[in-house]
Length: 269
Image (cartoon, rainbow, N blue to C red; front, top):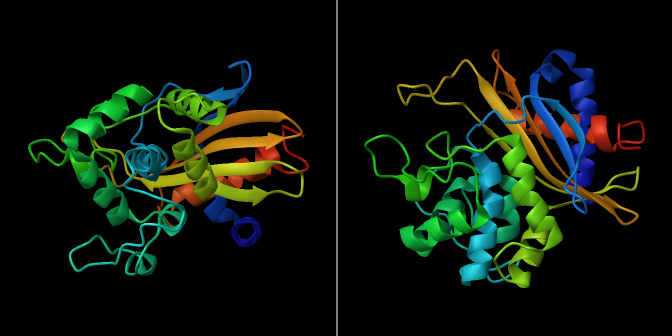
């Protein structure tokens, strides 16, 4: 409920600052979990982009299935000097729940290190996740900890919803507990329209052919699923903005999805 209040507050803030709400939507896609049919498909839904922090959904499934993550509150790992600490929320002890909520990069990296390259790659293949390229940055051999961070791993909105449909339907090749705990830490509450939202944001910059960030083209994701009255759908929105990257575009994508699709005046109401 606290997170839902924050989402609503963010939507109101963006409404009061319209210049910050302007971004180009690359794709919006909504698919029925039951049938697999597209309910809404707008834009280029086959364009691949780094998953950025939306890959935490996959890492969560891996971590819970492998027993590295034990519950929504365990393990509670301390912050250590040398970890990525770009945001104040990242400079403190972190649990699976706060990791997903605050998008703590170093926590993801600790999970993938504990998995090791072979199990990590096996899960990505089993999930049929995007292009499955875990090589990382060219010549740096860092795919275990950076492949999903504007690097080699790329996924399209259509591939996002295909992966998420299997999660929402409970058919991924991991334990039921892994899927249940992942759903719990993705829970964003029930909207006034009655839609119960599970989702994850992601933000970053694409990489050019030279392997360097294209800093003039920030991108943002919001992916997940929603259910109401027995109806369950998966969704993905990918946006970009050539002018800015603040607030993170994942937040802008999330606010847009909630307003455009799932609010009382949205397309799915």
